[in-house]
Image (cartoon, rainbow, N blue to C red; front, side):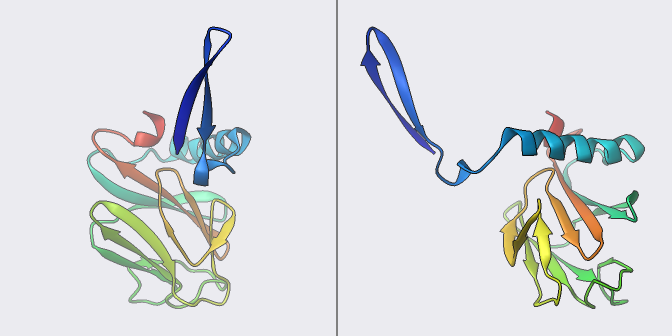
Length: 153
């Protein structure tokens, strides 16, 4: 994101280059915050530092999972770190990896893929409040840098 200013009629004007943020729509952000908030009311995010996902199944929050390990496998398999009981989820569907306090989700060649905030992706950096759809289930990613999520700071 870059900007530069100029003077016109005594007023300084700025042209802002939004770059990769050009497609962000405030209405979509508001809708996502409202959607996430309804689950947080039922099951508030854990306090303390760290990254967590809230597993949503059948439209209800089920449990918070801490992303303490550098790599978390997600899928139907018994040995998956985050097990999702959903016929539309592959045995090892995807993984979340942490590197220098940045979390990335990567599809593992699954049949149905993953959506992050409604967009199909094979790999994407996760941000606070991102909604990951895997099969018919969802994960809400939250990154705490203190007593509460940055999402509502």
